[in-house]
Image (cartoon, rainbow, N blue to C red; front, side, top):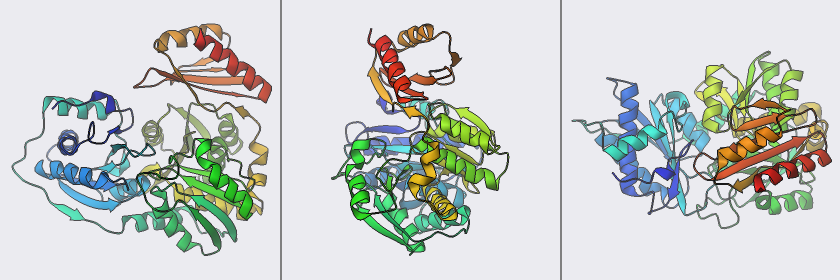
Length: 455
């Protein structure tokens, strides 16, 4: 089959609807996935979970995907319309051998794609399965089966996911609170509705709640501050205690204090790590290499074992499994728990634990995080660069006196500032993040690195 290799990413598959992602492609992917998982489980009759998001194209791509799977002899559990975290839960809860979620996450409406896992939501990533799928599809090297599998529709997975998430967080009390939540017309609304039903003491104003894969109000990516303008305005105007935003497929969650200021994911990650370390003293916490030093400070303060991972949700999950980590967090708003059904994102557990912490300490959101707002961060800055490795070499030579880490791109650390610059896996892009002990140092060093890139 002639396939566009460029849509096979490091963590998933994403491309344009009907030009790159088609029904034929989806069916072939289903066959390739069964071929891959069968090789890893020789002689086993496979059962695969398949879910989808709210995009207009997702139902037909899911149908074609499942057809490819059953033609290859596997049985399919159709778990229907779900958030990505509920999908991960479904794979483990139903004891499936793997799963595929039809979604392009926060990408615009013209995109769709696929997220894939093995059993217990173990990740399938670029060098650990995704490239193999592309090879199988290109060479038409599919498993041939003399039997056709069956499709079973399984209802109730989203509700069971929420129940599990809340139970996992524990039963500590949550005081009455007022919140504004923007689900960005994405899948987060599904689990947030169930969450709010469990906590009637939470007075919620809902923004952009209707599931709509055309994203008519704004891009469903809260990492970009321009997508949070209306939410921040409503938090302040309504006198809310805090705000929440979720992304397109609901696997990322963001919080905002009562003044509309974003709670930095690195701080939230540290707070959640401390909560989990109270329950699991001395445990390992995994987080990504991008600057967010406050997380390290907070892990060490609570007696945890910090472990750095490359950027990417599948890579962090992989390290969590290797190191038996109870919690992990990525700078982009992914927060992972070691659940009985696997290690994956837990946005509802995040929300419950954070609200329990606000109640336990009897403080506002801004008071909870104030002491941790001690470093100054540039945000991620992207540059189009043809010679990515040559540019990285120049930066490494310029900052040769700093402490060097080459886990993912290069991270260079000095006493008063530190930064990471890493190449995109699929594009001619370098991604830079700088952090420092004060704003002046951050801006000076940021501009210094940009000057080298621009030469």
